[in-house]
Image (cartoon, rainbow, N blue to C red; front, side):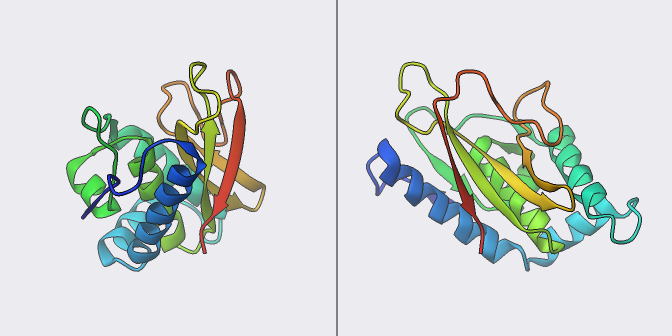
Length: 168
């Protein structure tokens, strides 16, 4: 399933809120999906029982190693369900964040999203989003889209604002 975000005018905080609502809906639906649960359990199998930090970190690295960052079509914005991302192996930042949050949530880890304003030409608009996950060491960023990123890394340069959205 894909949610095409064409019904809401692009740009501004309203569009960000609308997009995040759709992302949260997809996570809520997917966290009980047997394919998502099985994928998460397979990825975290090497972790010791109840090592929730290990689980979150392994999920992050699995997505980073197995999902190719691919932009949305020109002049289009959509968010796809995480089972589509698993099957196709491609995602942009919001689709990858939905997959990560769904995998985290499917094994009981609290998750959410952090949106940032990172475009110099549009410092008042949110232009990037990534998953966040609650671990025993606190909330950690899971921005898989940057080649040099690691679990817990989040953009710091050229960030003009941040906003956190927690999943229910």
